[in-house]
Length: 388
Image (cartoon, rainbow, N blue to C red; front, side, top):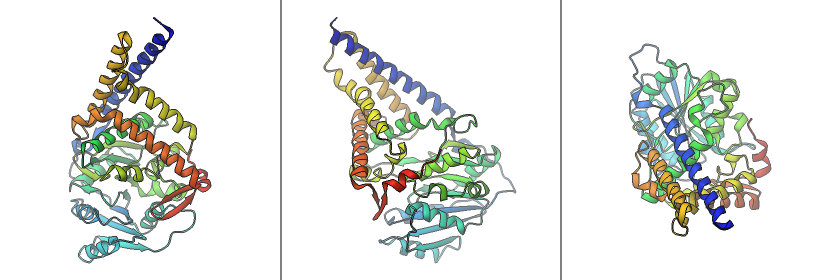
């Protein structure tokens, strides 16, 4: 065996072991995440009041259906506070039209963004200033709920004495390629955050989900609300991080079957939509982007090529890597209600994610910040807003 053959075999073996480890992490992790729809909630007389806070900026496409699903929740005591954050489309008009017939809905129209704030984070804070609930539910303006969702979630939070629970939604995508991207994104998210460990007070793991963050209002105010993360584009997970750092208890539940969101409608929307938080998610560390993208090329993309360009023992190990990668993605796709065929697009989705990583990093560095929803945020201010 030549030196080249030896190096290729070592590479193939390493990749196979990496994917075997990934599969183990995913399978064990999934087994530890409770499905929200399986929570056996009972009738109770102490349902606390919930304030649902929804920020909305230029959300006319999905707003009506999402908001009406929120107003159909069968929870006994809740209010909805929708914050129109300087929208330039019909968002404000849609909110006002629904509010005219729904007494539970309060609408706040914002016309300015104070210095030192990201638009969404400021809108969420302004919404909480009007909230009267013992619990706060932060959700997005395109999330659709089944009527029983809030009963399941509140009962679980109270029964388990958590300060915060986050729920993953079913993500609806228009085609197989984008489903593949979602499955791959979920794999990376699970490996990076290990969110099933968030409930362990001795673990540094934390969690937050933009579609569903349910938090005790007292805990939220104790940590300063959104003020400590005013300029965090990844506000949902960083809110969870902040709560964990302050000793608050939290957990992640699987909300598939109760919560649904149309994430992005096209590849272009995916690329643009992740522009604000991929670099932020690693605290603007160039080394992390470089290291993770090189690792992904070597172990997530190259094995799918090397099964056509290698031979002998290396071929079998590259082939095993491919099978393990596809099987791991399938294990994610099935409970997420994605098509199993989406797992076959893993190497293409991995390349898409690498492109998004480098594009986002390059734009942020070249521009000296991020431009999001018609507002520019300087990189120096964004980097200064670190948590932990």
